[in-house]
Length: 376
Image (cartoon, rainbow, N blue to C red; front, side):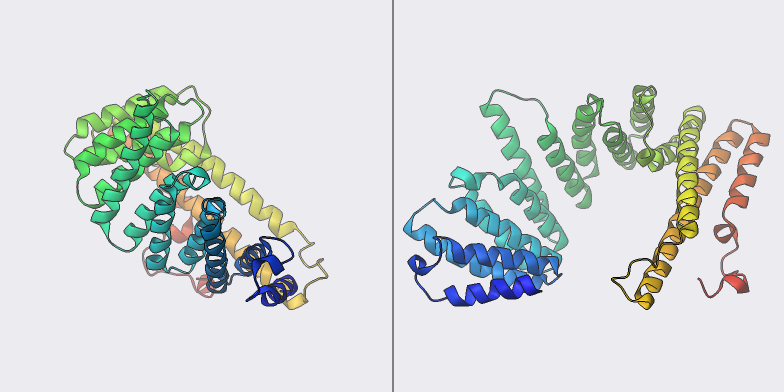
């Protein structure tokens, strides 16, 4: 707050004075930039956006006298202003800013750098405004622009930038009901991530999305092939806990496609990852409960530290419940796979572990023990 007040005093002294009376040639917009950063840190994005608009106006005046010299600064301010407006959900205004970014990027020079990011934000904002057809057009334009650059350089390969743009395009196709086309685009994305040995999580997540779209497109057999091939592709790679949910969905999907053996392999992988995550979360919660230094920070009042401690405990308990619920769901899917294969005893054991794991989730709807009612 003190720093923000200091910057505001500097700004007020410079306002209305010619640029040659400022301490430096760009002192006023730089102070406005610093003030906007401080206001953003304080959570006052509305006020920060006002500072950004003034900063933008000053740089535009300076640029009028020296065309192109301040285009990079203007691009920076526009990107920051967009961020403030998005944070306060003023999407129409943010969209106007993004359109200005795109117009500026067409002039070349240092302002060209954020063009791809601006186009992506244009798609995001149109989607948030419910203008889904326009969002689809924007996503297609982003793909075309990247492919155009590749063609000019004689390179037709898919890179990281293009794969992300294609994924967004596929999502927009899906939203407007063009699921079959979304699946075709996702095939191209999956093919790229398949060859990146350090992107296993991304590859599996893309195949998950692809298989779901193929099923909805009436191409269930292809969906099963893509999933089982993906499983074979990564079987020797390191397992990532972030992929636990993906492996679980693979198991559910393969079981629905009448591929119980492959479904079992996926379900077993999911349960292993879920179990590791649940154990890690439970141990973290126990360490937090055992810690006795939560009230040692003398900068804060005791009531505040106590309230913060309660919030941390509840957040930690919620994480434990979530991890146990995920493990329980994974065990139930594992049980279904085992039963389909006639391994009834193992299925019963998985059911028993699931039932014992999380009493809250296992209770019939509406049945809450009296001692837990206040927490609930």
